[in-house]
Image 1 (cartoon, helix red, strand yellow):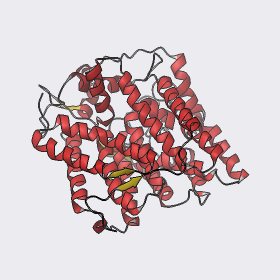
Image 2 (image 1 turned 45 degrees about the vertical axis):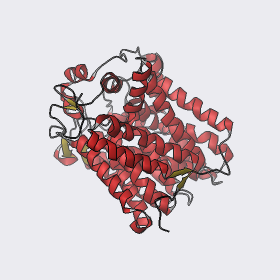
Image 3 (image 1 turned 60 degrees about the vertical axis):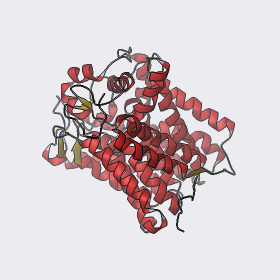
Image 4 (image 1 turned 90 degrees about the horizontal axis):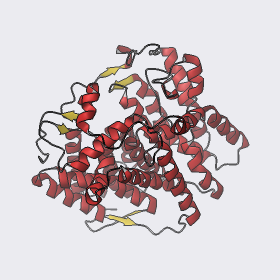
Length: 465
């Protein structure tokens, strides 16, 4: 089937709003932060892409009760994380607020003396809302993240046919974790002094869903929305038209998450037989050019960011008591963090398939790489694969196997210490980070991280302030 210039690509409601949510910051980025010669054709092309999407009328829409539940859960997660409200917020929010305020207080990201060079997809849209309404307490950022989590939870619900499991799935997904408590018992190591159990291995960590939302929502939300779209098993035309748009959008949200999503995109193209004749070449060319510009922006002047193979740097940051990479440690890491959920996802025909296989492969290979001071690549590129396996485990529970359900309960019980410690921290620690930070003070206070956030050189297509 050849797509004409006027042909619409049908999307289910949750996927439709998910794509719009991911692509809107890209429109703002090109429209407001690049020179007119780049901005005009880029925005016109992106608006054309959106015009090609059609909201399909669902024969089985989500009930108001389910929508309400997902909204309450999303709000509870954002409040518990400290992003919305007065509760304790972890150290990464110093960075989140600094980047958000930088965008809200300035009309350009290329300023006198430095250029903000970071994946800013999560911050752009709410920063413009703050400019328009003048609030300065981060409420628009929290609201925008709430919307993203709400969209994903509705995508998750839409994947499930069992009425009862639809209501339980958000809790299972968000409360899942690897068996970090066992790893901590084996090594006795945690990074920092806030019961951050997931760093028990020392040289690598895979984040639980709650930890991901609390610490790195800018990487987490696009990864989850993208994988949920692909697990739905989209049609060939949806794969060819929407998947490249999602990957391009995810680059601006988080290049690490985009790296984790890229193998799934290759899978969709293989399944489609690389039938590029089914879609206008202008679409793929336009997406490729915009992806190249975003990629250039994100990788400009990054020579100082640490990168290694794990065997060349077995001790990540060499803090006292930190375990280092060993082959036996690698095997134990996979046994505690990946294999239990992978076995459950593979145990049922409802979840067994190429996406599960690719997810396991990604999670087995990522610990062998290091990029960033705290191996941001493994932490964030693992999020799509972990989400895919957790969703696969949830899908497998639609069968009537009591053994599988019991095994899932055991896996959940072994991991519950991590989301519990993350959640209880909000009530046992005093909030010390305010929402009024800026990027200049951030890089001055944390100079080792400066290369990951700013450059003193100009990027040719960015509009100066």
